Length: 269
Image (cartoon, rainbow, N blue to C red; front, side, top):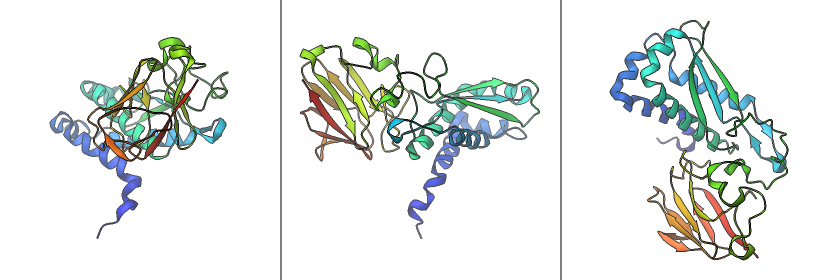
């Protein structure tokens, strides 16, 4: 008998454990005998996100995207060869968890594993913060709430929006055309000249917290005149106006569906 959607709350942990099993051919199982287990760390990261929720303008919920894990000196020395791989898996699973809660983050989810002096074996500490690539950003930082409700696609200075002036008013490419995507809940994602990769992975310029979206799902190429949408071999495909596409030039008003997310293509000017 299938229990259906009821399994969803533990699916992130289940997927995380499954990926751990395949990592470095089971070496993890030996390493974690008698020391802290990664699932405990992930649980703590999820609790930290819950504890640090902040409501932004427009009703969005901002949670931390940078998590520093302090391990005891003994655990840290045991895990050192796997720290980078473990941090990557923790970051991906935390991003999935945040996506399932429909929360907002600035930029990528980052996990750093460090040596915590004074911690007993089996003990660890998780510190969470909102990180924008520079200083830690207080939620009320000038400009964050005042800007368009698409800042979770990347804060000022985030790579996809460095070209032509970053966020803020479009720099006037293409005769002053303001090209943007609008999600079903009203978030706005301005498009700049050049290529923008949409996905839920670290390499995506425009990150969407949707588990139905591939890490590198689709690409938008804007030459100042038109925008071409190209599917990047995504698992679930890319739809425009209900039709699955591989590559298509977008027209104003087109509805793009990726996973469970719908984006409307808009052009002003």
